[in-house]
Image (cartoon, rainbow, N blue to C red):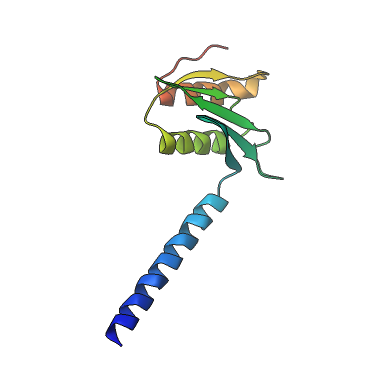
Length: 119
């Protein structure tokens, strides 16, 4: 009987931990999808403030980020997700279109990761 109660509490703890992870993932403004070896797409969730898609490539000595979303919060979340996958610095940030409002996000992602920024 005692083993059954202990096992039930352990199972309940695992379920709660699993739900907590789902809740955290649900709070992201995008979904990370692996599309190749160390190549990832960050797909904006419908109607999220991310406003666009992004992606990144983890290389041998650094990370290249392609587009930094249209929202500061999404850019910060992207950097946090990259840092969960690798300890390598962000060395390159490439925005295919550079409206003035994306310069701040590009600079912030590059500087936080140790890379450089060029407009």
